[in-house]
Image (cartoon, rainbow, N blue to C red; front, side, top):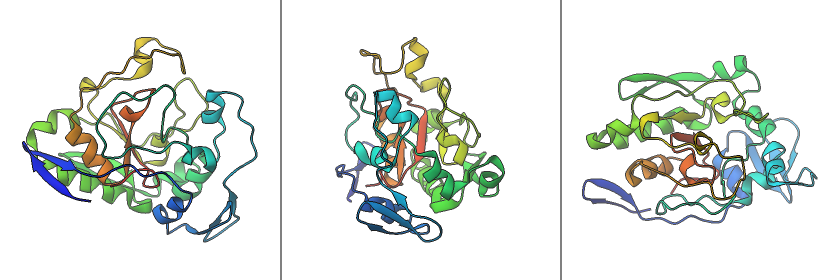
Length: 245
């Protein structure tokens, strides 16, 4: 990766690569030993098949019952220009709860045991220390602190850890594992605020975040909800198996 400074903004000149299953092992070496064919071997406990054998019946079913195959299906365009995503393109929105729960905690108590305070421009946020997530968020804050003009988009944060499901669904939110942050909602857009139904065609794209903010997060392994057809521009979550550049 090369970095440059253009008009006061950090620029990342890198391209999004096709996701491969091996990327999981690279992203989470403390937990994952290796890939054996179509099976993911953990350092402790039973193996996980990439394909759980579920036959998806609809786009929503892919989000309701994702396996590792579904997690990896859509490559994430880290550090690429900010463009309106294609219909149903939501890289990172599929989160197999058993996979992430095994690393970060499968209950509020086990997740909270792994949280630690992170300074976010004077605001204390709780974030998971697992897999270096908290350190990654600190690195984002460090990068963006050099650009005071961006501060208004970042603070106050609308929150990090909260054990919950995604509104209107049974899907576990990434906030449940302490690996997601919502930034200032004043400059944010969320697909459901406009009254659209999930997977309805024609959901409008709107974004007010500067590219420098998005790329700072992506350099440190975060995905951005503004890369989703179901846009959530306040939302970033630590997903180094998909992002990083």
